[in-house]
Image (cartoon, rainbow, N blue to C red):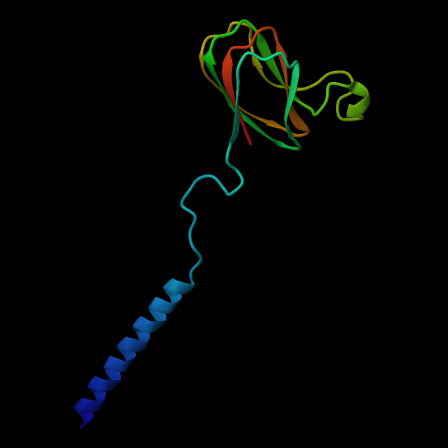
Length: 139
């Protein structure tokens, strides 16, 4: 009788231990296996020959990731850390000059240009001349 009781008691302990282990595993939070946090993905826009002199991509802080030049143009592009070119509207942020986040020179070869530069006020692009087709990525 004593051996029978010890066997049943041991079996119950094993089942309780398994139940606790399974319950613990089910209670653990789901682990994110990606390297980019939610809402941290890059946004992108593709431009073709444009006549717009200035384009505002984002207000607030972020990162200029890269620029992919697909089709060569003869124009240039300058990426600024601001939301406007009007010095009166910028206030104390930048009254005389704007911080450049990136530059694409005139007739720059097709390819991918990685910047990974931070901006704090906004991302504004000034297009000069005839643009080719390019894709701009930021977050």
